[in-house]
Amino acid sequence: MFIGEYQHSIDPKKRLAVPSKFRNELKNRIVVTRGLDKCLFIYPMKTWQEIAGKLGTMPVGEAATRSFVRLMLAGATDCEIDKQGRILIPDYLKEYAGLTKDVVIAGLYNRLEIWDDKKWNEYKVNAEKNTDEIAEQLGKLGVY
Image 1 (cartoon, rainbow, N blue to C red):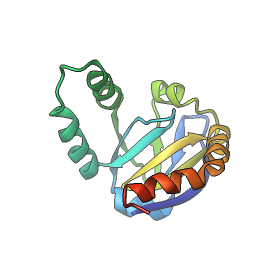
Image 2: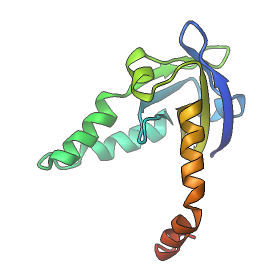
Image 3: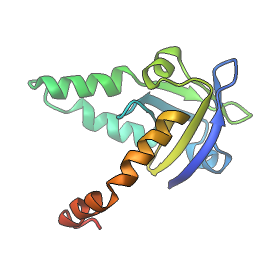
């Protein structure tokens, strides 16, 4: 399970260190793809295979479904975690998420998200303003 927020930097060679506490669970191969809200998602290979299987069976008759599947599957790349615990993030994914040097890696149960540090802080401020409303909606769904 992935939880927590971690401050990291992308080095000049476009490498990003994965938080050490997650490396055992991720093993040595992961998938990085476009996420929602202009961040990147990191999945362990096993979890990605389950998600990709579901996405691959979605009906192609609806434009919104096709767009989402393309965003997730075509935008995905498998990455090897090197011996120092780093991954190489392709330029197209860095550009999509607006990543520069300073990033936040956020643990979200079955995935990690990579955010530009400034965008993450803006997102948190906005989300924190709406926590009562969000909790109410989750309560209606029986989640909280």
